[in-house]
Length: 251
Image (tube, rainbow, N blue to C red; front, side):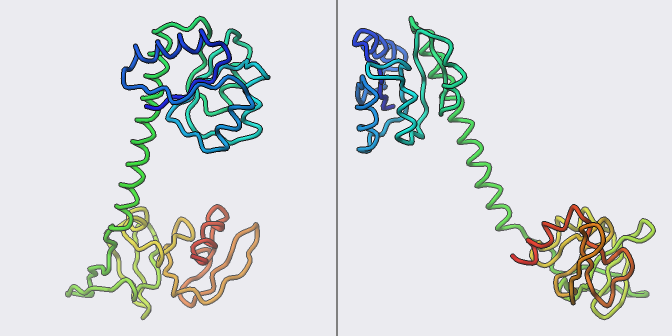
């Protein structure tokens, strides 16, 4: 781990470096900086580190002035003899706030805290990748088995006009106007259908995008879907779904 120490007292900087080496022998002290001006210059020139230890009071001013001149996106552990700057410190990319005199236990605690934060970030990152991969590779239903009299038939999703709940039953309505009762709830169907093709416009209806003939504004910030096979409230896009519905249409 490459570390930059920003500290205007030589003894304090050397003491901190010694503690860091004791806490983790692999730590490399990349650079010592003792003023706001030299810190700003170094970061503008591309100084990069895995971690920054930063004293708040430097020879030429308050170290918070550094953030007004350069953007630092690396983790920072602040060091100071005063506790009044804690809130301001945590507004920056701060891991910990250490009060002088700093002990080995303080340094170990701060480094351990940083490691836990980084592990959490990595875990969240890999979870996002996994979720994205699952979404990309998810297999959505392409057809539904339906009962037609005494026989069983299949309806391709592109031939479905919409799904609707009626009297606790879920009905599939085909583009030909035929109705079939299916053994799925609308909640289950939302996870089984291709999101780019189907949208749940209200509690009772999941609609295929090709079924939409026209859209009109409706009372109370809602929308009305004009379609030859939708009637009454079934055609109304509920207010809480209007924004997502517009995004869906525009995607």
